[in-house]
Image (cartoon, rainbow, N blue to C red):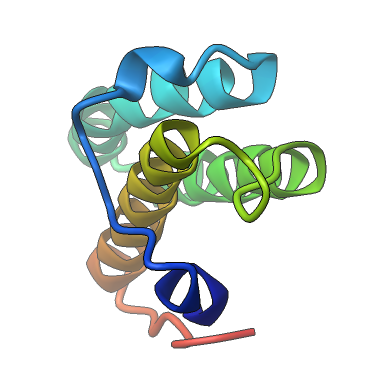
Length: 107
């Protein structure tokens, strides 16, 4: 994220329609299931299923990170990708907090 700041790139929700790569679409669909998966895990007393949801999100993000560039992409696309990254970071952090785990600030 430091490099994005140096490139004067900011989070932007205006061009999310530019997120058309398969890995981007899979993350968006997975993020959309957050509330449903959390509720199902809680109602059925199956916290491991919610932990699996978070693990799958991390795996999807890893694939996205390997396939999609931010620095060097068109500014609108880069800023939409930053928004996606922040969404993933937020969901992972909140999900780990729900499971009483701490999320590292950096890897």
